Image (cartoon, rainbow, N blue to C red; front, side, top):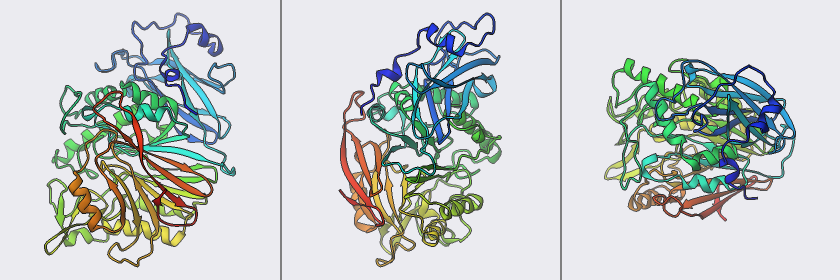
Length: 512
């Protein structure tokens, strides 16, 4: 089924079409001189009986939003049909200046495993229509479940044609694995500009998100499907770890910046109110169940991680092995999240167990005379944390564990095991990493060297931008690598460049 993109980008509806069903009387309605729904609509965090609906009022999106300092009542509806003849839930949220006039409405009491359509009204202004889908009932057996995952969308390095392609597909879900925005300019052959410098304050982060969310292809993908989202580093600062940043060495200054960045992230994505930050802290890791087809463990590997090893206060680099790297207490997830994840893995009962995290988990050793070098900003900088995660999988034996990731600006397929140096070590989980939406990738020479030196890597390609699709059935998990022909062209086509399959009960992905 191909979903017409124009359905989600048609703009506001006729005023009478929504005024009567909502039927909330407040006297003289607020009048907007310009469309306040410039950033579109979105949904996320789907459960079997509900979903989060999002929008933000921003008539002048790149000027702080252009709203007054007063709260505004925003009405919402969700219906079983796109003409809103069968409205099943509705309500009113207060869009406040404290949250940049963003709305996170929790639509509840819905039926499991079905599509819904939703929309918003503020004063005389009406939003575009979005479509969403609730999760299948926990005790149900879906015949199929399809989702896409994406990451790394540097605005300047390309157009979001990958999202235009994604929005046309028949998907149940999108999972975004980080680097939704970029705080800095970098790369070659830039096709558009941030126009301003690196954001450090709340108002600056808000404008950066607004710039990205003005993209019509990104809006289309948000309006077409519910999303699950987690962050990586560029939502705050390059390669930061917990409260450490090589770009902002003063911890007090960086903590303030992280608080601003976390709030802006929450304000612009369809996250549940439970994810609202408390200063520089926010709990965004969570488990989601989709019938007995899959469990998704969505992780946060930035907020709680140990400082990078072997580099002091400098930027995490690719360095030769040092004793600090092997300290047992070093963690990517933090002890509390590690314990939480172990409990989730222990109770996972679905046919497929998806661990959704930010980067490549498999070891990627770089050979040099006398030894190997390892990248300190990834799992190779935290090898015992990786071992503990894989030991949890080995101990609890969830059915068909598959790890998905992004960050590396390349497609990878890998086998995961406790000791990558032992050829006969059993494979504990399959891993699939998607490339970037736009961010430029590694050289062909470095990819070839990585594949030759690391037998656990079964596939790697870094010259294509795009995303990955996953088609789950009872028998198999089929992963498609969807490559953009040329991200520098606005209307570039997208083509499947590789397909891999994980069979039910068989660990490890193989070419289709």
